[in-house]
Length: 122
Image (tube, rainbow, N blue to C red; front, side):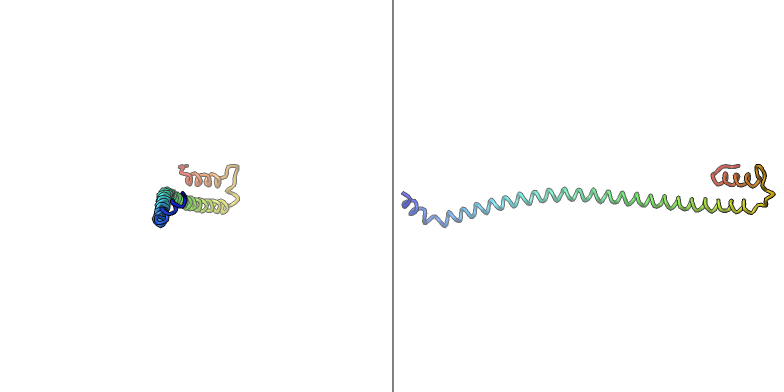
């Protein structure tokens, strides 16, 4: 019986081998298509994440510019206040000892100048 099957299938062997190779190739191509589709989905997700990260970096950079501007403004205000206070200190130091009293006129003037710095009108 096997001899008869071998006798009939022997001429078909190259065609059967070719059919097996074609089927294996088709299965492999299907696998590759699935992998490419999966890679495209992953790539799109990563692209969206990248865009979100770029937007976050831009927001952080804008915030850093605002912080630096605020620090520069604060530094300028501090320098101006420090300079004004040095002028007041020099003015107090230049007064003669006779200007001292229980409530020294020098102190009253210094307090008046400080009030002017703070926006008061004393």
